[in-house]
Image (cartoon, rainbow, N blue to C red):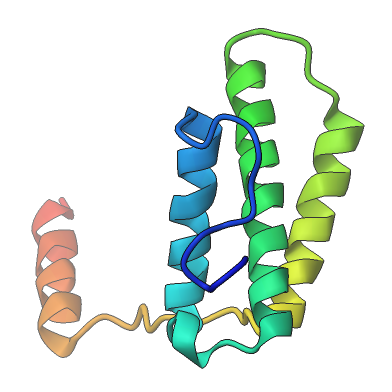
Length: 116
């Protein structure tokens, strides 16, 4: 980054991959509280995460299109991406899947209605 507003990128900045990189970077920064809340180091890690994500997505697109796909390289990239996200503070957020009492009782009513 130069002045904080523009990425230091050469090449076609309007390409699909370039746009996806910027979108991912913005999303990662937002997940971490916004660009203004990130240290320079965190922003650098966020950029690396965005780049690794784009590379994985490119490989995934090739794979589903039936093109050559290097599973080992893909695995290495996804492992590195996971470690980079951990360094950024990404944590698994468990979600509550406990049904409400109403949902539980309505499911029980369905089960009882289906029994012969």
